[in-house]
Length: 207
Ligand code: 5GP
Image 1: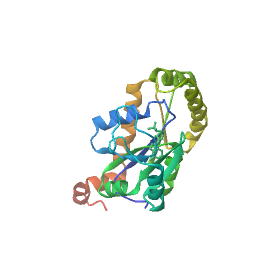
Image 2: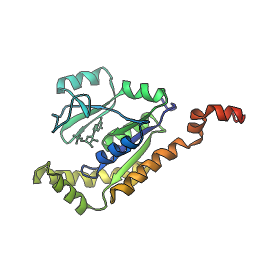
Image 3: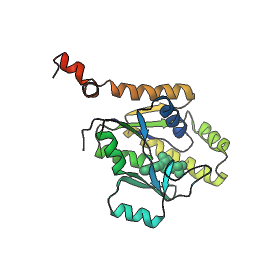
Image 4: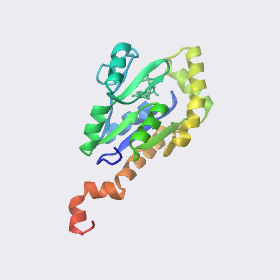
């Protein structure tokens, strides 16, 4: 499962680093990048809809999916289970599409083992103080939950070593530019260009 026509981008970050906003903004600018919709056992929040942000399933259904081998990877994150569906990703990248996964670092490491040319991107906040301030501003979590998230963040950020790229999300627009640059540079790689522009390569007699 190492070679496929599409690109697989995997973005991880501690909670509050701005991962979802960056990925959402990228997808608005670039329709070739499609998200993968994960399954989760957590409850929907706010305006979230089944089949849009996630497939919200019971713990029992999640377990059945594990047994059916339906996930490329799955992990327990903040006491809930999350898994990446095998079928949608394989179909899309086999057709030459680009897929972006927004998952935690444990999942990202698993994906790299399965797809060695997956591109792993870690998003860091500029400081722990700023991360705390962002979590507080978001107003979604209690002080106790924020404390746990910050402790987890310190552990998670140490895992950024295993990633191919690091984006420091200090200024949103700069971080978005960085993300676009990573995506674009993957598409300029020799193999990607040869696949995408096979007419030109044949005309130029490049094998
Ligand atoms: P949230 O509940 O805030 O949407 O997500 C919590 C964490 O789980 C985030 O870091 C998110 O990226 C991660 N996550 C979402 N889907 C998956 C998945 O399919 N696999 C893994 N390993 N992590 C996921």
